Image 1 (cartoon, rainbow, N blue to C red):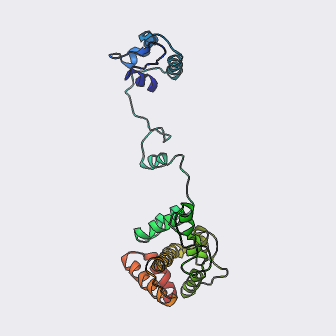
Image 2 (tube, rainbow, N blue to C red):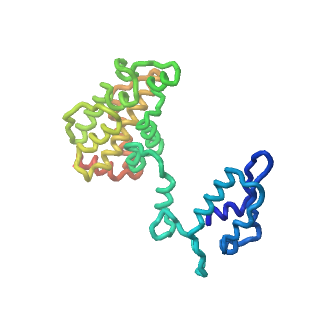
Image 3 (cartoon, helix red, strand yellow):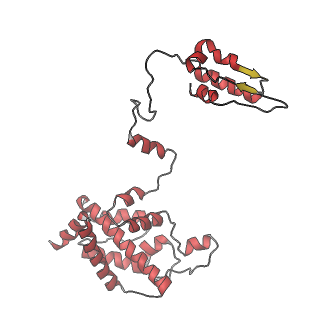
Length: 264
């Protein structure tokens, strides 16, 4: 019936040397068109190959349709009971999309929006680090601004740089955890390792702390890149502590529980 309605709302033409096939069913209801296949008799003009294909498509689409006297109702195909729901609409919106590991956690973590956007770009490797600039044919300072030793990538800056590793190690120690391995790999992988340092009940607080530390590392990289200003790790740790307290005051209660675990 959907195919019939589509044809009823327009005239379909298939140019061959002259004209044309028209389905002219204006003024005809769906019920009238379906009865005894009356819609077939409305076809006029020469039947070209594309028109014949459309004809067969409509024929097969409506051949089993039987109209009744029951009132029409809207059926939402994405739910088994045919009823609309926001949940199914959201899922339908993302059909065919490719989920990015870690992105769901990014939007669930308590952190300012600018920090979430930074993490989202970082996880997708869309920050304009040296490797990406080279990939796009742009000039770049190839070595990391923090350690000045290794090629700069976003995973290196946040996880594998010696500067970042020391900061992660000291932050974990201050929060009562012990790192048994060097931070390594992609940001998402290190994030999973980081949150596993504490019991599951503190995982959401660990997520907020991860976001804060990663953000401060990125800010330090940018300060050295754009302003030539370098801050040492003790000062960055003090900044992280201050920012963590501000985040807790702003509503990061799980982060507060993680910090309180160390204090109390």
